[in-house]
Image 1 (tube, rainbow, N blue to C red):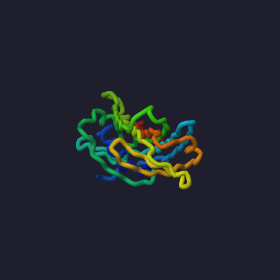
Image 2 (spheres, one colour):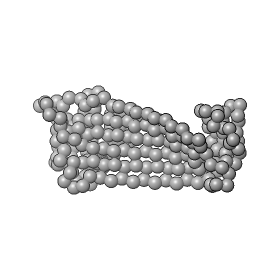
Image 3 (cartoon, one colour):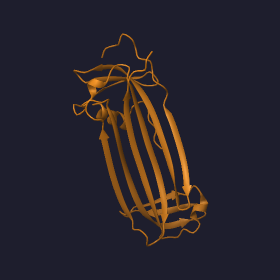
Image 4 (tube, one colour):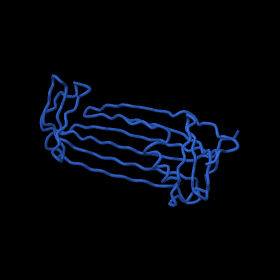
Length: 207
C-alpha cells in the first residue's frame, strides 16, 4: 500500500486543485504527526484491505499577489507551492491555518463462477471543490475494476494465474490457502482498486 510523506506526489497536486520567500516574524509550529489506519475484512467469496493516511500541514506564509503558499509539515520541513488561478477561495486562507490531507485506498476482490462474468476492465474518476467564498477544500476519487479468468491453479505453491481482458497473464500468491477450496480453472476474480483524497483547510488554532 502507498504512504504519504509531507504533501508529496498526489497530495501536492490535489492541494493545488483545492487551493491553487521570506521568513515570518513568528514561525508557525509544526502540526501533529501523520496518522495511519489499516483494516482488513473477509467474506465467503472475497475480501478487502483498506488504508487511510492523514497528514496535516500548517500555512507558514502566503502571498495573495503571487499566489505562493509555504507549508510546514509535521517534521518542520517547509514546502512552497504556487496555487492555480482556478482556485476561487485562496483569499480565505491565512497564516497559521491548517491544511489536512486524507488519502484513502483499498483493494477488494471477489470470486465469480465460470459463466457469470467475462474478463473486463472499468475505470471511473470524480472530484468536487468547495463553493466560492468558503474555505478551500476538495474531494476526489478514482477507481478501477478488473475481472480476470483463472487459467492455472498451483495448490502446492498456493498460486493462481489470472488472464485479464487484454490477454496478459499474471501469477499471484494466495495468502490464505483455504481460499482455493472449490476454485476451478475458468472461474473469475473481480479485483477493484479505489483511491480517494480529501483536503480541508481549518482556521489557525487559538494560542
